[in-house]
Length: 390
Image (cartoon, rainbow, N blue to C red; front, side):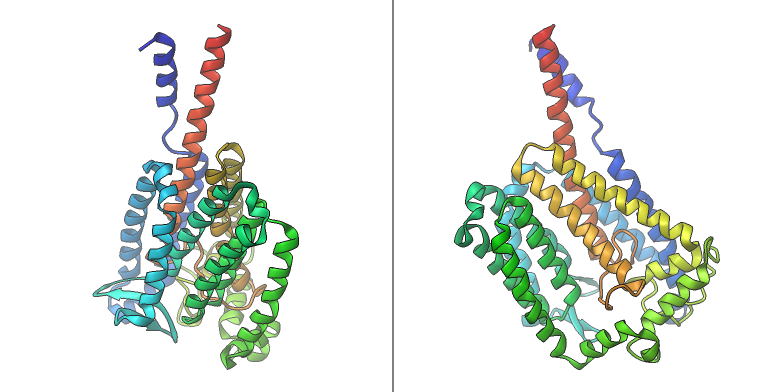
């Protein structure tokens, strides 16, 4: 091998295998999550399972599995991810159908969102969101300038979205429907679809969303409690009123780790959907702002990775993965702060739950994969320029 090629290869090999600007805030959030999951769940776990470490142990196992998913997605060839767009999409739809068509579907609190195989259960809508991002990135990048044509660039993607929405509406899971719709709209817009086509689609969904909300009494009551939770504090507004009390009692510095009062059988789901409320009570405004800052940094880093890549598929994939995590975090925090109606979405990297944690860590692995490829290409280009001028 010529000397200059050896130098270029050595320089490329010396590139850090993991994007520390992305890895460190994610690990910090996961670490905070593990600690707060124990704090928020210990009383419930002790009374229900006789072991206050019950959820902590499971979350640690989920983290190990998620770390494996991150490593795999960091090193898998991106061309393989590109090629898996349609198989992943098909598998995601099959799993969502399996909830309703097989005996493995599991219903909890009136929602059929899980598949259970013995002691193992998972929520198919989480990997389905990842599959949707991969499919949209693949399809939009492949269409090129034809994305501006309604029948080529918009209609196929809307049909895929409608299929997902129909399957998820059967669960029902309005939060996931909103996230899926927002991801599709944003990626189509970023990918070059005409705003003139996208706007009517968005406006058409509003009356459909209204009809869906009005089709069930509990959704109507949940919407009414959103406008005035204290009026419905004993029923539909119970969660949000106790969530707001948790934030209020936390003050600036918080009550201290383990000292949350609302987690003691007052605030429902304190280790899953409403874990941010426990953070607000135990770590105070300072802890809340720290968590918010970490999410903002991850969001900025993800978009930076998208901007630096020269490949259309990888750029759209980075945007989609970043938006997926960012929207999930925004919706969860908006709900627990009373800014959005109650929805069953977890807080990424922090809430208890294996499917969410594993899927989001896999998404981070893909982002780091794209970032590493960008860095290798930049180093190679710089070295080639030095060789050309040297």
